[in-house]
Image 1 (cartoon, rainbow, N blue to C red):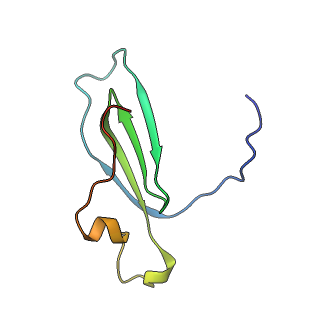
Image 2 (tube, rainbow, N blue to C red):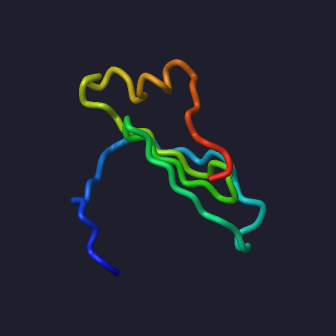
Length: 80
């Protein structure tokens, strides 16, 4: 593997399983989406499988969600 031009980060946050795949093993496509506010989605065949929402320091432990999460918006893109 090559060296990536980015430093490794290990943010703390909430990890949720959004949808379970139909079987333990199968052929499929995997997608990864990273939003500007740090949320990450891992998609299988265009469907969100794992979602990571970082805990933002500016909330001082009052909330574990980003502003988009608090409004109920889902900015994941199906079909990636």
